[in-house]
Every structure is written in structure tokens, then in C-alpha cells.
Image (cartoon, rainbow, N blue to C red):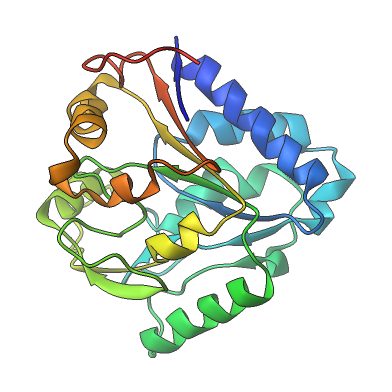
Length: 241
């Protein structure tokens, strides 16, 4: 389903409510959460709602992606963005956060470790964003659809856009990411896209099946919803849900 919201604030409230619903209702809640600018408001609102929830002690978080060669303690790492926007605002035990280590000496083992974790703890809720090139996580255009965690070469677009997360110019060539197959296997997925700067990629995503964008792999599933604000949906015609 595609839902269009009048504002980013309204969209963020709807996402925070869904996160709280899954925290309450999932028998063993396991969340896979995108980092970056799109979900920041949603995480703040969820933290405000969930801070006193006893169910937080049952919550597990699994990594979506990370830059290879960037330590998790570094500003700009995917872990640090999530820590800044969510982890540091709720009483979440660090032992319940299973995250890719982008500086590991054995990155293939990192893939195997996260894959094993997901096999033991299936993802119940995923919140994804869509990159300017239509990527999900670091599943980049031009790659075969990945079923499991993988090492990837970053596209020029991703390398350029990602510089906004770092104070200084940072070399980013490769990433480590869950596969689209793992994201799609989550019990529930929300894909959030906000801002006029995403309007072109939204139009391509929803109207041009020949584009073969990674995010198009998540269209047409009953358990996957796309949440857009009106700015991101500026170039498409669709009934509001």
C-alpha cells in the first residue's frame, strides 16, 4: 500500500505509532532500522512514546548496513547515526543491538554473523528509506537482488550523498548490507520517503518498471507499505489512503 501524508510530521507520527504497536504486539520484537535523515523525526517521536515502556527490555535491533572501513564510533557511521537519533534516547541494552562492524578483519564473517542472528531472531519490523538512486540499505542499482548480507561497491551517487554525514571529506568505496531478500522477509516493512528532493526518484520508482531500482523489489507486497509526504509525491497521481 502507498500512503501519502500532508506533512513529514504527520508521516513521522504514523511511523512512531507503528513502531510502538510492534513493540507491544510482537512476541519477540526485532527491529531493522535505517539510519540517515529521513527517519530522524520518527525515531524522536518513538523515543518520546516508548521511553517508559517495559517492553523495551524485549526489543532487539539488527543492523541494516554500514560503511566498510568506518569505525562504529566515528561520526557518520550508520551505527552512530542511529545511536544519536534513537539508541541514546531509550533504555536499550547495548547487548541487544547486533550491528555490522565495518572495520572487521573478516567482513565475510560479519555477513555470516548477522545472517545467523536473523535466522535465530527473525525481523518483525523494518523501517527503510530510499536513496537518491533508489537503493535500499546499500543494495545499489545494477547489482543482482541480494538474498543475504553482502559486501558491495558503492555507487557514485551514494558516495557523493553520504558526504553530508561527515564533517570532513571521507573516502567511501564499499559497504556491507542486508540483502533485499532479508528486508522483504520481515513480518512488516515501512518504506519512508520524504522531501521534494526525492520527488524524481519516487516518480521513477512508481511509474517506470524498466528502471529496475532496488526499491522496486519491495513494491506489490501486502506486508510492505510505502509512506510518502506530499513533497516526495509531488510528481505522481495517486489516491490518498
